[in-house]
Amino acid sequence: MYHFFVEEEQVNGENAYISGSDVNHIVNVLRMKIGEELLISVKGDWDYLCKIEEIENDRVNLKLLESMEQRELPIKLTLLQGIPKSDKIEMIIQKATELGVSEIIPVKTNRVVVKIDEKKTQAKVNRWNAIAQSAAKQSKRSIIPKVLNPQTIDNALEIVKDYGVKLLPYENADGIKKTKDILNSLDSKNNIAVFIGPEGGFEEAEVKKSTDSGFEVITLGKRILRTETAGLALLSNIMIRLEEE
Image (cartoon, rainbow, N blue to C red; front, side):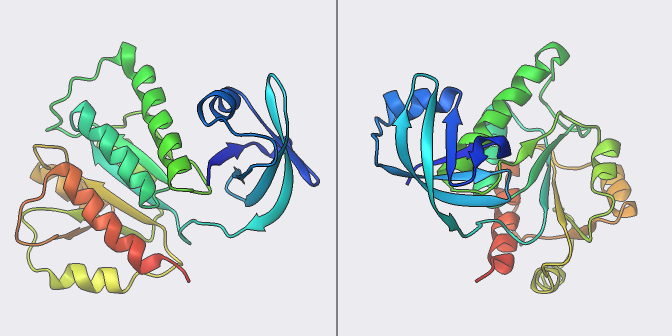
């Protein structure tokens, strides 16, 4: 079933409407008709099953049929991602959205090989957020994860300073038992931050700075995982453990 996001003011009693670029998508791409059903999410607070009642030039009018179960994890899950090459960051954003992240923070660590053109930064961030929105629709998320502007490591650590669980996979970490113990102890009371290095990994000074900020260094096993694999492997484990009945 197709899924769209609307603002709170677009819902009034038993009625709602969709506007903007989604109208063209509904009418000319999906070719939906009056009487067909779709899902809407409102600011991550409510999800509704709706029926199309009327199609106008600039809006699609809906009838709310019933409230639907929210599809979000019980905690805020933030991915701090050392910026990889463009095709990789886009795939990471898409898949991390499917796995339940609430926020993605691109981080300019020392070994980031991508040269960030400040003049083009906002266009990149807009594209990244569009990818997150598309993935949120596809995976029927109740919210659209926000992709922030690229941050320095100090700023990124400050953003998640109050999180209860902060994990940093590192190739020089010892033993998988610590990782398993931490994952098995996760609960719905603590927000979680995951920090993944770029293609070149972390410098030791960056790991030290992160641990001083409360991050736990963990291992994901004996094999070296690419940056686009490591975060998704860890996020998948977190999602499964926190997914509610």
